[in-house]
Image (cartoon, rainbow, N blue to C red; front, side, top):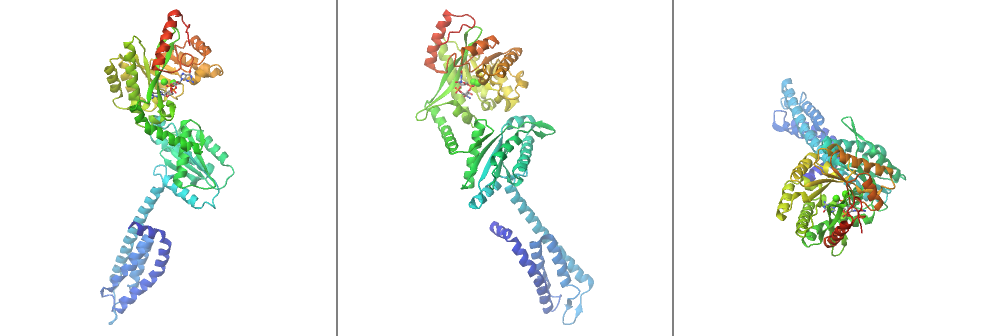
Length: 561
Ligand code: C2E
Ligand code: CA
Ligand code: CA
């Protein structure tokens, strides 16, 4: 049935032309048959249904009605009841038949129009997003295939993909419709820059734009699109900032198959998202990197099982007393072939999948096991574990933490959880509820990378945090940037006003350490004090530190090295 309908759809114009020419002949033919078979009293008048149904099917309601009326007239006042006697029909007789024909014409036309409307709607739906009404991924696919088919005629062209970044934050604050509004308003802006029909809505929060033909000014157009993305959108009259990233791929002179174009542009977009850049252009290295990432993730689970993952420990120093506040557990992956894979290369990817659960379970068990181990040797150290947004949103996360503490008989005060500021934005209410549950158990909560998120300030007083860790970017710019120093001071003051401690990470120099002490920062962590070290090396560092602290235990008299 489907091929037949498609064939009819493709040849609609020809069928209309042929039917239009055939109908007068058919009407005349029916008249002749009825007349020659002796008149209207015989059954042959029913032949008129054929042209009427055909007209309704091909031309819809209008065609069905018209042919019904004409059919009624053809077999009407001039058609005798009995040709041999010449007896004519009375008015009511042929009018009734004409009315009946017209009704049949109307019904067949209505059925045909309805079916056509439904088919057209299905066709539209397959090529458009029903919410934004913009062309969708299938339509883009068709367009890319069409361009690839015309490879010699069409000039070089650029495919761009734009993704909204802060969708979680937007949805949790304004609800799902804000995403649709953002997509629609951005599509209009891009449409004005590059021409409306070339903007496609390819994912819930993603647009693709085809800049075809041989325009010289592609770079200028792309810059204009970035600038347009940075203008706030309006939602319920409120101006809202949208974070977006763009990936581009120049497809010239050869245009690869549509799926390859999409794969390339989305790989470039992923890199733009990973490195937080406005725009990234595709190059072959990117694809290799993406493939590597996926392979790495595929190997991660096995790596945990086969002991390739371990924890390094980096101390944090309480500045006023010069004593150890605790240590941060940082994950390390020693791959048998690739060597050392830094956490930045796999944690973020793992966080986007359920793999992070396995990673966190491993880290938590190792870290708490290490606390117990150290206690046996007389080392009383609090260990901080990094947890991901997904961990906090997972049902039963706090039960798992309690279980591990019980398993190793470790007191909850010796465990600290570092939660990044961005993590809090995913689902504020559930995250806060989970953190309160953990803090009630006396587990220490600290807000990591403080100063890099957007709006956690307004929630900070609701969080059961005992520490904020000011992001290392501020600490490292301390001596070259007055702004960074002001932010640091303000963050320390804010922490103290809220009755919690301020931690500075990324402390690389003695000068930075001194400066932090002078502005009242409570805790410092960084390469100046000690790099993250494997357990045995950390234990040696710790022994030396304790020894030197025994000789020197004044306020900021930290003996490093
Ligand atoms: P983070 O939690 O902000 O960890 C601090 C990072 O800064 C660590 O990088 C540490 O080695 C580095 N660092 C410490 N002091 C200095 C310094 O003075 N200068 C400089 N330049 N860097 C310093 P690392 O180990 O590569 O970890 C990177 C990120 O990976 C961490 O950032 C954390 O977000 C994530 N991560 C590491 N381990 C885990 C883990 O077990 N679970 C989770 N979910 N994330 C982890
Ligand atoms: Ca951390
Ligand atoms: Ca941090």
